[in-house]
Image (cartoon, rainbow, N blue to C red; front, top):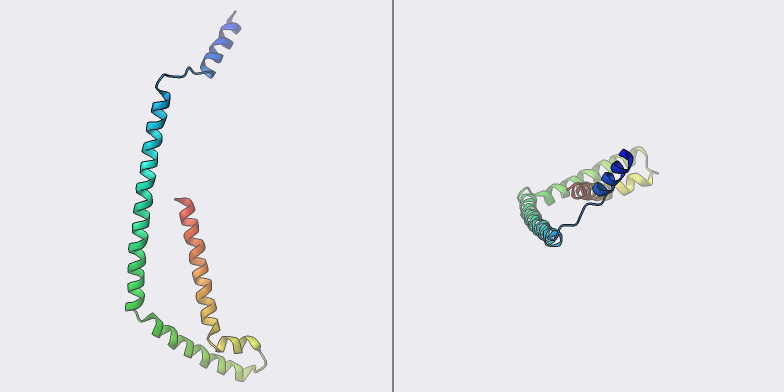
Length: 123
């Protein structure tokens, strides 16, 4: 007798009755969640645009391009010095042309892209 009662009680708790306003309640919750996501998307996008503008202005104001040109000249001088020590190495001639700087810049941009995608996944 107690086993029948327990089984019937478990069945009643397992099969919760549907409330008459459950559809309206679910739609209201979905509307609130969607509205919140749209606001977040707009705020994140606006923050990205503002951050990009600030970053671009800082790059322009810091004379980055002139510094890259002077670093490229330094790399050429270093490559010429290394070429005197080991003239048959192809890698030294490639680095002396300034390609080494552009390779490292490209790798840095790739690394920033990976880091940014990881941050976006966690949000």
